[in-house]
Image (cartoon, rainbow, N blue to C red; front, side, top):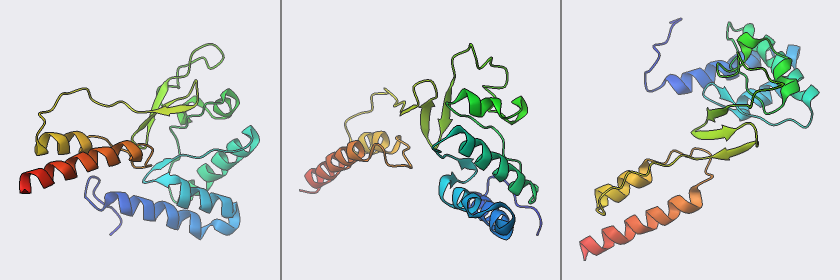
Length: 175
């Protein structure tokens, strides 16, 4: 099989496997840091990393682009909070919101990544939580708790309180 249907439930795992296998096979050509980046800093098809210098960030991204191109994969939709990093790539490689920006004048837009919102201007993550008021029932509380997507666990202390509330609700209905 040379094609996989997009949208199947195993698709994210297969995409991750394909990325990792591609860089592993050419690790000796591009370095172990590329493999480390793809294996540890990617979630399905989104890479999120921080580098100590502009030069290291640009070098890592350009080498990763070249490495993935061997597997006929295109690394694009690049976003950074640093203007120098963004200027190192052609507009076609940048995130769609940034293609037409004048990086020297315009404010950087907010990016969505890994279930979070990333404010490039202040280099901070933030969440948008729905203000929909649900009924104070087991179903309403569970719906509210499960509406928060936080794969990185930033909101775990808050979600734990919701789970505790849900546990108390369940215990009260059993007694």
